[in-house]
Length: 311
Image (cartoon, rainbow, N blue to C red; front, side, top):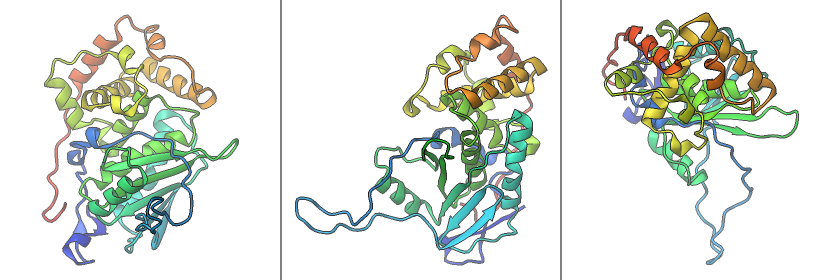
């Protein structure tokens, strides 16, 4: 399967990117390069000026907007033509239903704006100019509050690269969750995104996370994970553990699945429903041990090497 987004770095609109690791290759490194949602302030309008010298500064880089294409709840914007029949669009169109089915959540009514930059340089220039305090990550999801009884502004920014499929699935999962929940704890937000960034056929198994956890003396600690509230506190081990807990809850026993579903339903009504670990301990004495046993039974999905020419 090939995603027909033009590879502008090679100067030809007839060159296409590969399918971005259909069976898990694209997930490598995403636990480091992704970020959860950040609340963004409104930006002032007008030309920026140098207050000391009184000179007009160079305009800030802008988001893409020459072309657009609507798919399901998303509107994709780019400065190059998009191919409406690209298989990636069809796959992303199915993502809301997949999340709705597996997490028993309704579909939100908000629109997610997705800004696709032509290359890494333009994307990073935009992020650095508009959000200088943010670390450079491959993709970002922003949830800007619009007011009482109004849906949040849901925005995804990323660039056309070899991890595009994984990045879009990850960030759009964030957007879909924040479109229907009052709040999402940091670990849960990243854990769910880590599960749904994988192609449907993999049943949420993140090969890079699973291999990393098996190769270390991993000791689950959900109590610690639930205390994390700042993005900078989430490093590679935290992303891996967050994925492991969510996959364990979703794919181990019906009782564990129900605990996760009940917790998500509580988050629809209350942004502070309490911790999840005490609820999990009501159905098992040692959740960490049970989670490790679950991981030991998972099969690593086959890896697919991208075709030549993909970035």
